[in-house]
Length: 214
Image 1 (cartoon, rainbow, N blue to C red):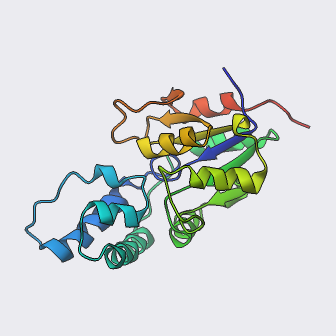
Image 2 (tube, one colour):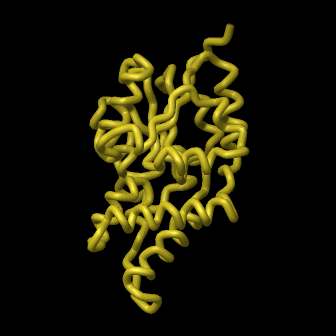
């Protein structure tokens, strides 16, 4: 197995189980536009892409305003009941921190959404570089977020492994020349997604890190 000096993580569906918050807040937002009795489409495709892109794909008349409404609803839901960390994630991060490997975040969340999801969890201490959708013009599946991470850290693409739960994560990494692992514990639609690795459990993650203590 190849090992890496940088492990970069998506948040939703990878570190934190936010499916319920994501779906509930999006459904509430859409019903304000389409009516309480509207039959909603399969919204799983919106998981892992920037909110503005999701609203454009849903063909709302004013995607920017709809996105702002969804962001407000998401933050309100997250403040009431936040999604839990996936079992085994904290333990995996602790093991990796014992090495000299660098940990990073690339997420489709805005900076405010990231701050809310990480508030009070003790997670920020693990990650030395965080790239949110507020930091680049284009989000996943564009390679721009990963290229921004490489620029900020000075890492070579061959040193980096990106871990995410969606096709958008895998396409972002692949387009930037970075290896990618699909995490199956949070993936809503894993079938047919191309990835260098497919991980069943968070306990597998530390195996990708160089043992370089001291």
